[in-house]
Amino acid sequence: MKKHVRNLLLGACLAPLFGAVPVAAQGSGYDIVIKGGRVIDPASGRDEIADVGISGGTIAAISTSPLSGKRVLDAKGQVVAPGFIDYHAHGQDPRSQSFQLLDGVTTAMEMESGVMPIAQFYAGKQGKALINFGATANFICARMEVLTDLRCGQSTSDETTMSRDALLKSANEEEEGRIIAAVEREIDAGALGIGIGLEYAPGTGRREIYKAFKAAAKHKVPVFVHVRMREESRATGMPIAVANELIADAAATGAGLQLVHVTSTALGDTPTVIEIMKGAAAHGVDVTTEAYPYEAGSTALGSEFFSEGWQQRSGITYKDLQWTATGERLTEETFNKYRKENPTGTVVVFMIPQAAIDAAMADPFVSIASDGMVMSDPKVHPRGAGSYSRVLGHYVRDRKLLDLKTALTKMTILPARRLEKVAPAMARKGRIQVGADADITVFDPATVKDNATYENPLQASSGYRYVLVGGNVMVQNGKITPNLFPGVGIKRGAK
Image 1 (tube, rainbow, N blue to C red):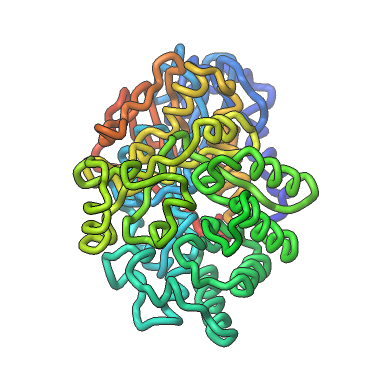
Image 2 (image 1 turned 60 degrees about the vertical axis):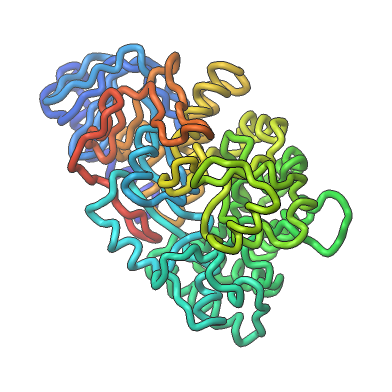
């Protein structure tokens, strides 16, 4: 249905609700009323004290006059915002989702690495998800399918460490065609784009990546890329060069590009890389980026990130690595031991300059995404539990590096717009508007806080009075509603 026709029909359906009858008299029909909060909708610029009426999982009314309903949620002194959208979340299990939910997140997607097979991913989570979910097609898994006898989904190992052939081998033209065909099969099955972990598969050729962008353009889906972190040249500015490679592919094909976690890949060149992407976007290239608000990254110790030369590339050494199973900082001896004996084990990697984080947090062009890991190890990276609250508490309230409305824009409407052309369902998310899905986060801007730390990461954020997913109250005063799983799969083309 064309957009203007849909809007006309929506307006016709809502006309009796907002016609001659005073808003205050609409009353008893709402399932839930969120009462008296500061309603902020970054998409429209709305910022006022109002009531929000919800019926059947949808926002049915927003009124500065009182509304009444079957259930009333007191939001006085609170901000009523769209639920946060995290499109870079590796933790897709219920425990990880519980931490995300308590951080104000109502939709979390695996877009960087992606999954494969995608149909199995969606089917396995249906009716078992606390929040909404989705994923791209995993390009490394497609390489594994073509170049080895292994398949993703048939092993518990991390695909970034399980097959050296899939990661290091170059594909010939015939194999490239089969890799792209495997990716296109996943897109047809509902994948939201293509996720390419270039850093983890250095054997991936430039022609192969260009073909992936051509396929993405053909199917009108974006490409989410973890850029290469190595080049033959020893010249400075390597992050700039690898970003330019991807921007050129996007410009040449017309495909959308999301350059993931810009701070942990561009490091000290983050301000320049952001400037280049903004310039490309201003000239019509569909390029976006995101970042998390921490000075450390995290990855598998057996991954190609730690191949020969990692210290020179990243500017760090063994003592900058924290083993998530125990919290110990590594030495050369323990690094070699764990990398050999437990390659899928993860480390927290302290390498991101604060100036890079500040640049990404302050810039309205850069959205927020957690890159959260599965919340299992006792010393896992805290970003899976506290990214959004850390932005609101530390960077907005305490440091005043950006204002509240800008922060909410980066957490809601920016990621929604990145995906709504692919998945029409996203056009109803990231907004506090009549007709939008009732994915809503209600928090106290004076107290919202990330409690997860590197020493004690398995601590939920605080300051959230309510979090709603599809009109279901999933969080009330820091407590998750038990035995309720309203999360739905967001698929390509699905409305």
